[in-house]
Image 1 (cartoon, one colour):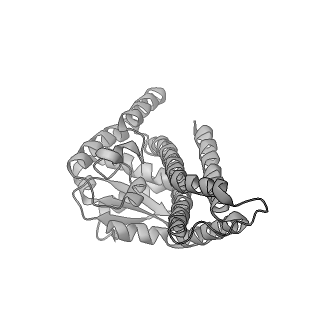
Image 2 (cartoon, rainbow, N blue to C red):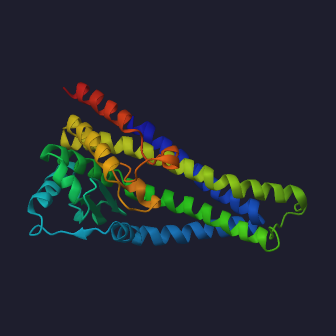
Image 3 (cartoon, one colour):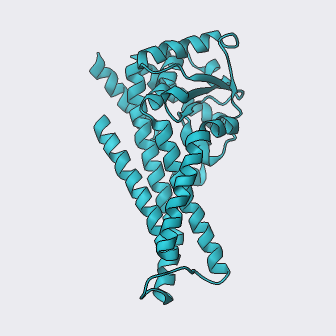
Length: 290
């Protein structure tokens, strides 16, 4: 299962990169393709070094030392030893909405953030299971994978928006093909402007869902408590439904459960697998581990 999920992730990331180059070429020829590639490199460089700080700042997370939160730091330290990774920095988000996320470019520069709501809601074993899930993300380097995915998807959307303005102010230019131009090129450009951001979002969400399944499995192995994680997910789903977080949709994929309410159009583009499916897999895993 782990090999299958990683293969799927690599395949989808490749598809996302190809889509980025394709929209660049469709909008502005070879020059556009080169621009798209350079833009993605620049955005990835920035996100590699600063995405963790940005994510923590957007969530309003505050770092807590061992003196500030001794129990929480102890749990994270013990689980990090089991996971065989350095202890990540620990943050708390002051909100009653129960949730958690991990961030950082690699296990040596990682952080876990939990809301005050999740600490108050879950039992110790359930909290350990949730933190193990987040450490699973760190160990699997999902934090870097999802940052790169969001960056490339963002670059595609940005180019599409730039192309929209190009159409408004004189049409799509920059095509350098000998036989290019005309109505056919305009039609291709319009199609890419409309469809590329949608396709990028779908690919991004597919990668996010695959990594959530893998982090569930990794977390269950780290904590040795797949049923505790299953119970925690059910509680968190109900808790978020009653107290959704006020976060940007672009950051929703970071959290262990979708922090938004999930109503309306949000439910059509899920950043996470359904909780029912995740719980079913964890209960099945618990049966195998007995």
